[in-house]
Image (cartoon, rainbow, N blue to C red):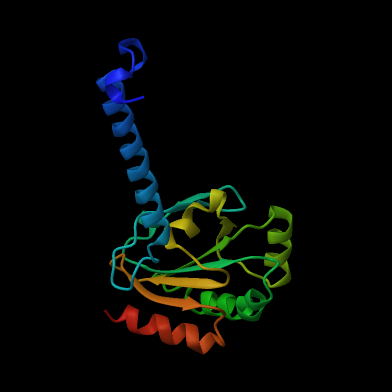
Length: 184
């Protein structure tokens, strides 16, 4: 049948066709925006880190803004992660080295882990700096972490200064990352 022979009552009104196209384009735009966002890399060195918050295993809510003017060492880990075990003691030793300075804050976020196993891990390695679960992976998604362990060092002005993918090899390596940031 040619278009001229289609009975008038069977053709869709033009406004329905236009509205359908608008909805389809909006849907495709939303998918494109989501894909672009998911494919974008982590926060780059030198960029301001967006505000984030965490709740510790003891129920305390900590916000990155609480630590304005301090260097923040943010470590993502998991109890099931063997490389995380390699750096656990070094991170605690570095925390002990800086804890009374008032200039450096260590924070740990358990990534995709159970609370019970996370608490066992913290006890096993004697970790005393604030740690909590990354609820709904909100913070790890913000940083677009690729796995664990990953550590992000934020300078006193709130900019990302250093990223360590994988475990630190020594306490000295951690201190060597932090020291130059304290003299800025």
